[in-house]
Length: 114
Image 1 (cartoon, rainbow, N blue to C red):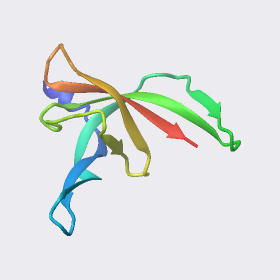
Image 2 (cartoon, helix red, strand yellow; image 1 turned 60 degrees about the vertical axis):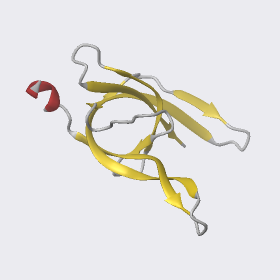
Image 3 (cartoon, one colour; image 1 turned 90 degrees about the horizontal axis):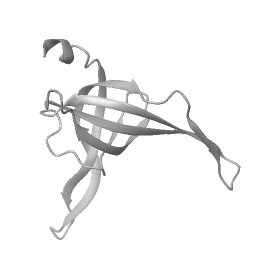
């Protein structure tokens, strides 16, 4: 166990829906920073997917796998995303528990470079 947690060297900020209230007291869903987490980022594919849009903008999709402790993120959902210190946004494609130890999340992420 201690060997696995020593691999959690990357720090990402977790963003998701945070409940705020408007002037009338109604709950309005907004996205905000939930908490920073330590994780392991593993490149999932050495080849990315490049595409060109109608406005002649080229972008690349690159996938990564993230491993973090289940106790770090208790209510993980697809509509959350991560940001690193450089401002890159890691969108969640899907996630599953690590069935070997059942103490980690394995999250498949996508980064879009423009």
